[in-house]
Length: 259
Image 1: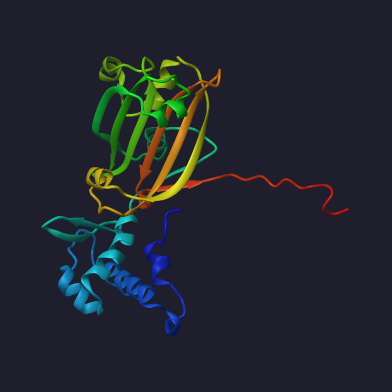
Image 2: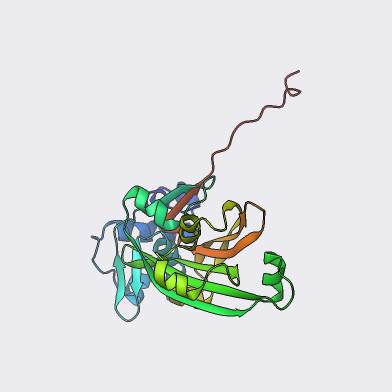
């Protein structure tokens, strides 16, 4: 799910059969790999000329390396090579917060932007949360910081009364899930999650300091309590280069197959 690594990008085989795009990624990977972490790459016009491509084509290729955490573009300053990030890795069989994953691997993460809004639910939100028409919800929007940069944009939508703004102000450590777990009311049971790749909207791109249209990993989740009431409808957007998720799959053998 994390896309190409620098090593795998450089090892794309078939020199004579490479497409222009593949060749550009190989050449760009070579430039990045030969530049010390913290140093600035040549400007886009210079680099595009060196690699024999247009600036627009170069910019598209650079997005791949930026989402992997190998380079960082700073508006008006330039593009810098950064060390490969420590990846937040988790099995999807376990429901846990980013903060819990980071604590387990010894990575320091911090809450970034935080917005709390009480408002009327949309028709879609009423349907997802199984609420009657005209219901109110609480929306919590936040950004997670790791390695001194924003790496995740999270939106939680909860039925009104589950969490108050006052409670968040007193007890919030950056994770809605952890707050609910520690409070133990309502008692949580499980979550249903759908995973997809998506392009960053203008709002999310601004919050994560990336380009609009950059690839993100998107989780859409429903959190249930032990009575199977939906407690939280959430969207989580992750920079692919900073997260790796896996699933443990068991082999089930049909006894009829080898008869």
